[in-house]
Length: 420
Image (cartoon, helix red, strand yellow):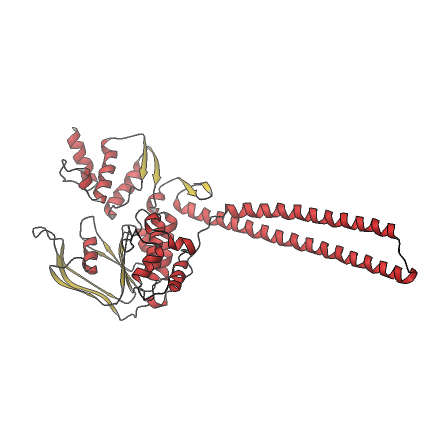
């Protein structure tokens, strides 16, 4: 088979054929670029593959194709990924944390179970060492109190001697005083050594712990009554090119705190639908009615935040009626305290930026009752995804989500899937 036939076969395999082979790579969409790179596995087989977030921007069907390909490969593979389905095909997980490297033998599900056990053991070690330290402090305190009482009895005895004889033995007293000071010094040195040893052990135990903090927030203002119409779309039609209809008479209705996912292959108009709901685009025909006062759009780049402003300034700019104290309190709920609240958004990691977007929107004086999600988990680490899931499960409003991450959609309680 000649090279062009092999290329055609590989691109077809990843649902990218027909395509103009003269088209430059930079003009392709994110999903198309990923598909082209994956197609190289068919065109140029190798003994070992290194795949960095291979499922980013891929639609559900192409993801399933990749899962099958990985399962069938007899070559070695190193994966960098936050796709939990893909990670479940691995037989070893290497976790990189602020505390170093940890290796778990098994797939992602096994890793999560072992991580919980490991973290619980570390927390127990800290607890046990803390208790040991407190016990040692109590023993030291008790010894010092007994020594002090002994000194008091000695002084009382001297007073009694003076009262009885009118004098006391200065030499004996000096000797006793010297012995007393030596005893006091020895007790303190022993105590310091013991307490320092336990303190060092406690510090080492604490340094091993890398447990993510759970969000402790409450969002009662996001509650939506069950009979409240949040979103109603009727006979929505849209196209960029009148010869190629993108959305044709689309209908959807959301009441109360319903959670809906919009599904479909790349290029079927999912992100365009979100733009129409947001008012960025105008429909060719049909009607869109958003029935709640506030909604928020969260995409993978968290575009609601301005990169040149700090997290704090973004909060105040979006929530114009909030005070500085209210802003600090709100941001602290998402771990942006003191100087971290003043960090410029452009200097935040992807996970920090998403957390800032959630803080700015969900902790607003008038929070949204509808969240529009457009592939929010792309390019994020697993711990950040878990934090997003936690926040969205506390949120009590409606959600309209675009995501090819089935595990994420399940974990945030999606009730209905609508295909485009």
